[in-house]
Amino acid sequence: MAVPKKKTSKSRTSSRKAANMKTPSITLTVCKKCGEKVMSHTICKVCGYYGGKKIIEIGD
Image (cartoon, rainbow, N blue to C red; front, side, top):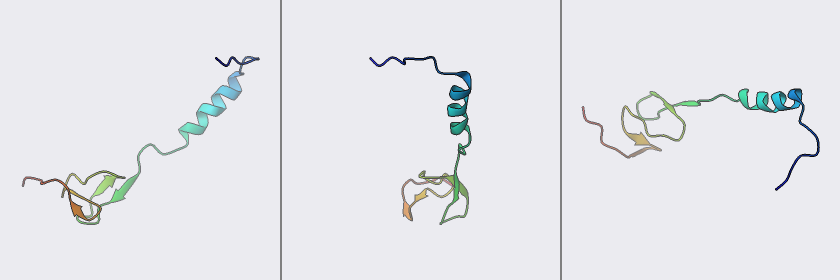
């Protein structure tokens, strides 16, 4: 198992962690069928479409 030769400083550790905090956590896109905001790469919960195809049936 690899073991570091020197202790990692607090500034180096926190700067590495800070790089991950800059990225947005959720990316929203607009559904092409109904225009509702949806998370990327997920089925629209309003109309049930994904990629222009009907995936699930939504009961009205």
